[in-house]
Image (cartoon, rainbow, N blue to C red):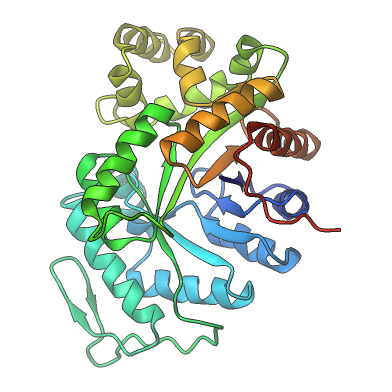
Length: 344
């Protein structure tokens, strides 16, 4: 198993360079309320040499497929072939609320979108007329970006069984977040169902987890409560993925208490309502040796690259680098390490 670092836009270049020196395999840039993925990865491409760059994720409703393909080709060229295209449909609230794009038939939309992007990245002119997208006509989509190769990996963010099977069928990897080892194992089983062959060789399994290092799990969990409140409070609670995940893990009453406090605008009380067990099963928390034990569980579940999310537990660059360093030590102690050679 390898490690990836999840970037934030402040200090992204310095954090990516630190991860590269430590032998991290990849740097991911998310897309959300604070920054887009493309700007951050463009910066990181210019200040690193070996680490892979992953959009984690570029939101499908936010870009037509032609622009997604052009952006991917450009980042791939600027980074010398290090870019990996992570895509996701986001959620109904963001799709309609931010981008004015209906969330209907997300699997069909994803399949059609990935097909257009892949054909465009292969370099041939693309004309397409489908139920969700139209490309070409008097001006076919034709990318002329100079690149080392055309085989750019596509990774999909996926949650439900059908979406996971689609990722196994049409993608080169899966991006997950806030997930337990048990949930990873179930996801890998669904991904296998979508593959034309049972072998997952070369298929990337890349979940990202909030990470906090402290003397105890309780202390580390407290560092992450604000992040959980933020994510579990997005959009309609009936459709919120993180609330649904907590309920599926047996924390229904606690989710109800969380939502009650959140509805009363008591964010601190909402965070306190979240049980330690839920945070512990979906994050990396505690001292280094304890995190190493947790990493073994994820490796055994089928993870090929484990994403380390540093923004929740540390607001400054120095603290984020310290978490990245501690996670590298934990991976080494876990006995699952497959780190690339660090820079001299």
